[in-house]
Image 1 (cartoon, rainbow, N blue to C red):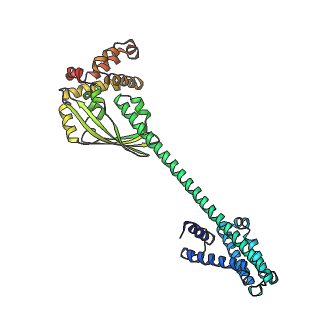
Image 2: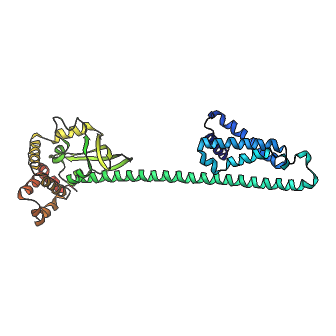
Image 3: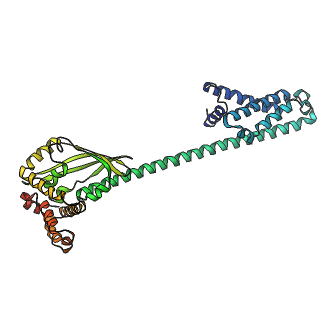
Length: 366
C-alpha cells in the first residue's frame, strides 16, 4: 500500500468515525472500486440511470461523512451536496442519456471523444490530487524537520548555557569569589559531599582545604565536562592539596550538577578514592593547624558580608599568583586603599596558614 493511499484511507476514516477501525481498509477499497466503475460506466453510456443513481448515493454518503467528520462547511466548500443532487437528477432523466445498445454510428465518434475527454480530465484531476498530496507531505516533512531543529537548537542552547554556568562556577570557586558563586546559585541550592569526609563532627569542605591549598597549583581544579543535558552537567575535576610537611595529594572527583533556570540547584560529589582522601586529611590537618584555621575563619566571618566577600576575593587573587609576585600587590597603594590594616593582616594570615611549607611554596611552580 502506497503512502498516498494510506493518506486516502486516513481521510476516509476521518469522514466515517462511526465505522470500526478494522473496517476502514475494506470499505475504502469498495468505495474506490464503486466510484471507478460508476465514472467509467457514465462515460461509456452504459446503464446510465443505474450508475447515475449509484454515483448520486455515493456522493450523498460522502457529503454526510464530511459533515459528521469535518463539519458542514467542508462539505459545502467541496460542493458535494450539489454533485449528489446532479447524480440523482440524472438518474431520472432517461432521455438525456443513450444506452449502449442504442448507440448509433452518427454518435459513435462523439461518444469516443467524450470518453477520451473524460479520461483526460480524470487523469488530470488524479495527477493534481497526487501532486497536492506529495506537496502536502513535503510541507509536513519540512515543518516537522523545522520543529525538530528548533527543539534541537533550544536543547543545545540550554546545554551550552549550563556548561558555561558550571565552568564559571568552578573559576569562581578557585578565585574565592563568593559573590559570583551566589549569583549562579539557586536560593535553596544543595551540596552533598561524602559524609565520611566532611560534615557532622568533621570540618566542612572550605574549612578543610583552606590551609592545604597555599598556591594556584593546589587550588586549580582543572574541570572537564564529560556530559551535559538540558538540566544536568557532569564534571570531572581534581581535588588537590599539600600538607605543611610537603605531602601532596591529587585525587579525581566526579560531580553531578543539576541546574534550574540557568543556576545551580543541586550538587553531588563522588570521590574516586574516599579512603585515600581521608587518609591524607588525617595526616595533613594537625590539631594546631585546625585551631589556626578556626581562628582565622572566625575573624573572617565576623566581618560584614560585603567586606568579607571583598577579603575573600583579595585572598583568592593572591592565592592564584606565584608567591614571589604577591608582595608587588600587597605593597601597592591600591591594595592598601581597598583593605584596612586589619583586613590586610587577616589576608596575610590566611595565606600563611600553611606556614610550615612556606619555603616549599615559594619554589613550587604555579
